[in-house]
Length: 98
Image (cartoon, rainbow, N blue to C red; front, side):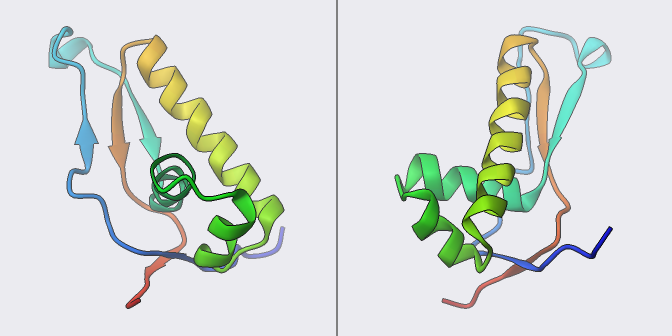
């Protein structure tokens, strides 16, 4: 397997963990959302950019962006449907100065 290309993100999230309050912490499972998945969601869903534009901002190909956003949507969906916490960390990223 070849090494992952560095992904560029604009900013790190203000919060690193989101959790439902309806379940006790001891019974709560979680999903791990990488920083590049968080950035993909920010660009596609919050900034409402097309995949080609978002991929350009992250300095990756459009197919790679598509894989990242699909993975992020699956994880967020799992967390919402199955009442899980979302922890944001890791990934092959650098923060852009622009």
